[in-house]
Length: 359
Image (cartoon, rainbow, N blue to C red; front, side):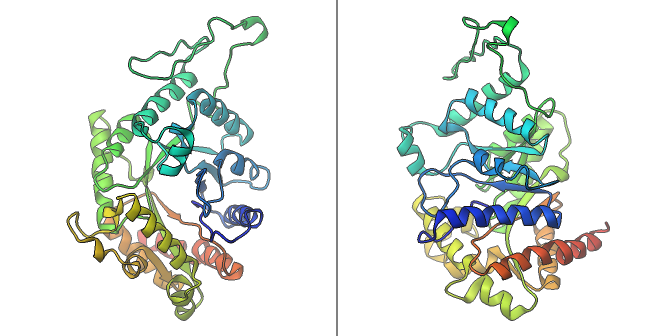
């Protein structure tokens, strides 16, 4: 879930709705739940994925809770390292550390970092976070060219535990996942080199997906390792209904469709950010080709369980083998239909898919 809701809706209600979606996913056997965060978008109601997910630890049993993502340019990496490690202990290992630079320009402006290289800040931050988890106090982290310095040498008192930071519950660290948006992303090469796992965003037209796997495999090869397709997640926007008419109406055609609202928002935001190449057939295609109807046609898998299972299998043919299909959460315009879609996805779509794949 980004999550993304119509701006007129009450955040007190939409936050509870998003929590209910994760609780339902847990009951239905979904493997993990990634929740995004933004500071300055009225439609995106979660400002801290850590705080939001912490409210779900005691209400869920097996689903893994993932920051989707923790925006590393937004705060000092020592804070992120400490918060992530504590969360991992609270969740007793049901934690996935999803990371990104933080893409929303208005967040960057609000924090006074709009003119800074947030990708560089991100790379510097993750180096420091991993060093904190790997080293013992006083840490003495001062990488060349890295703005973040971390040490407790002047104030530590080992005999009383002062100057010591949490290490994660999972050793040596939680799974680290990075969301990949751009076609031919170079960042996914670095993920392969560092054994981080890629999640290809649901924003991307399917024909761009193989470029992510090629680059991830290249990164693994740079370290003398073979890439495992089980480590690759692909997110898609999905709606499953008991009949095709309902699927088509709620998943696309109705002006009040949450899917139509979602893709209207995403199209506008990506166009403004000049990142809409992800919606194109090729990089030089004219902008006018990127219509809302194209996005609904190409990026929403909707239909009955049988139909959606067939669409998932076609996606796999286009992308190649991958380990996990990530179901994108939407606003619950119709709670009954939203819950039913998740149920059908878990109980009818994925069993069909896995039977077709041989187990």
